Length: 255
Image (tube, rainbow, N blue to C red):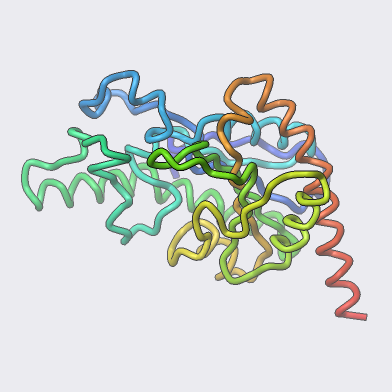
């Protein structure tokens, strides 16, 4: 397992059955790859990372004393929220921008480079998630933090928060209800669906039978450090209430 593939935050509070994830935390690239042929200003945009998501994840981890795993490198290197066999795991075109460094000299060279990146960065990250969930045990819940652009192809996105999920709605439904009660405009599996075969929620949530959500935050609400910290502090009690709702519903079913 390569510790250079991800950032790990150790939980400091005893028995916090929660794992925080941030697949697209960083826009950095490993030494030797330069900028993948992109202008530096493009690497600062959403095509390279989820703006604000890492800061929110770190703030939530600190507030809970919960463990967290964050991708160390840009999603343009390899997308940690894709299955290893997904053809979009290494993007050659993102939101209209060609990624020159992701276009191999030949199909064979391209496939070899994709396999190298998966082995070096994608596999260690997912192995670390699996190991952390094994440590936490069967009561674990997964909360993955992402962010989305306020507009897509000139169309405004009305949601402030999107709650994505795969087959399991135990946490997603109470979280959406709590967010709406708090005054947020909430997307139900918007602006994307969380049901993607082989992605992080599917592999570590659905296949393990663990409750999970991917929380998408609109980037204009968390675009700088102060905004991200403030949003995390607002989000934590909402997540706490949703987790309590989920556990209460489970006890009611058992009783």
